[in-house]
Length: 450
Image (cartoon, rainbow, N blue to C red; front, side, top):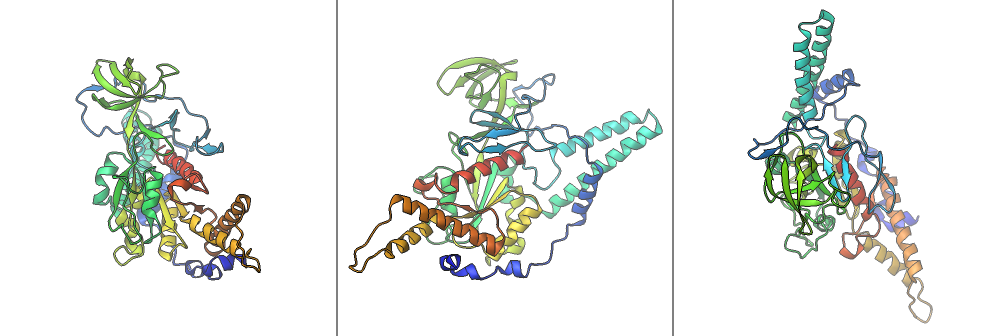
């Protein structure tokens, strides 16, 4: 009964749950990829990163080892997660390396993005080499090599077909091809998308680089906002692992390792390069000469895209996923300040189908909590009209009960077991589920980038 009193929509079932739409059947290319993946189960992948430009300066010697770090622990602590365990490992792919407040990644695109991955392209090259090597061997070995090549080529055909079905939108070309880590934030008008973008980036709504906020819909086209380099997500900065063929330029930022306990994980600026030596300047101003092998990685920008909401005449739900290129993002954040629309629930189903990490966020919970507190205080007015204010303990109890009511509503009406209740207000960023949301976004990025 309290749930119904809390929200007038609580006694109405979600249309999409009462009468779900037809199940989307995978295309032929996706079916082919699924079959090929089953056939190739158990095959290991090779770590390979494409070189995006021809090197013109100091590059990594091909004789040096490709992997710079040993596998990290299967369980890690996120500094802002209040001590809870965060699982980073993913079966079949290398783990990221954590150095202090830095995360060193090995791939330039999310694992769920359409198109062939670098590992798959490398597997094709290895399979072709295997066929050539088997030509001078027995017939059985040649057939085995040809079967392996056929499986990999089937996977490539499926991946290429998937990319043709979901091409990279023009507005994402620069950000995606440069390897930027991208967060998509979407939701209906007035739910606080832009304020949430600013909160995640740790900027004020009136800062020059802040996303525009207002009572009217301010997001009419996709807008990109960079996380500040000195903060990142949860003070976690991301670096691409420094590998064969990569170039170092003066004034470029790098992260160091295997130098000393004090310096390992520190960010430094490249001053000059000569042969296998690199002169760098630490944040404190100290200058060091390090070997090329002691350079762990190069910076990757983290950006949040403030996207128009789905299900409007300008952005219909049927074409939203493809038009916005959501599959090319590392994570998607679906925001509401009351209830999720049918278009948003259908988008969540599509994201789940394509295994894109997404987060359902209920914003502005502080408004609901304050409203409930006012109701409770009004019920305490005595016959003489004297008002009474709730104590801090009572206010905390009302806040906890209100949050639970909101979560119960989404669980009962929509079947959503995990909804993050947050407030994008600056002074409330450490309250409710905001720290948990940040920590889980960080974890999803680590998994997406392997």
